[in-house]
Amino acid sequence: KAGVTQTPRYLIKTRGQQVTLSCSPISGHRSVSWYQQTPGQGLQFLFEYFSETQRNKGNFPGRFSGRQFSNSRSEMNVSTLELGDSALYLCASSGGTSGSSETQYFGPGTRLLVL
Amino acid sequence: GNSVTQMEGPVTLSEEAFLTINCTYTATGYPSLFWYVQYPGEGLQLLLKATKADDKGSNKGFEATYRKETTSFHLEKGSVQVSDSAVYFCALSQYSGSARQLTFGSGTQLTVLP
Image 1 (cartoon, chains in turn green, cyan):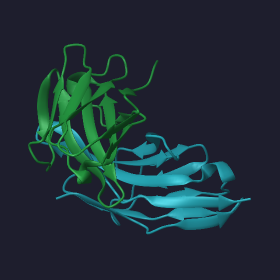
Image 2 (image 1 turned 180 degrees about the vertical axis):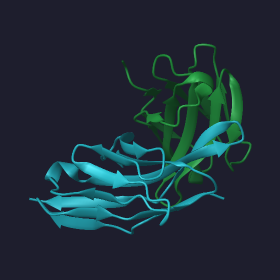
Image 3 (image 1 turned 90 degrees about the vertical axis):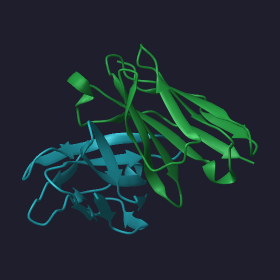
């Protein structure tokens, strides 16, 4: 089975721009979660989607948003980029009925640099 | 709220040395516990997990036992290799609303010297 894939792997943007990151979960997995990883704050939960619905959201401003498509692929969007948004963005998928499996499998991440 | 506290790094060991990375947690109820590993430039890989008290997770020579009485999940390996050099994250999973959410520790950088 193919793992979680994320595109693009690297991205450079300037302040004020917006960015969209994509995540394809493991085949059959319907739950997708997003995390931000920075040296200062570590790994922080952004949001989780299941069956195209956001079920959970972390403590991030409204500039961070996401969505999930009927094939379980997910995108996250960051508008009006700030320097502090520079980070590794990780996507994880999990399976089970209702996405209830506790084990999350991570993709390689998208490294975003905001200049 | 939930939290995970990990041993501060970095940790430097010689090849074949014994490894312990301490992890304690705070949570209500009965979380599942995980160790993930991150190699340079990569995402997180699941190393091992335990879903209930006294369970032992093991993989690739690494072990960790879910200790509810001490709220701990320490990672151990009897003989480390240079290829084990990476950052190790302890995490717990618990329901938040209708979905499970992972809470991570700060990570411990391990360097193994030949």
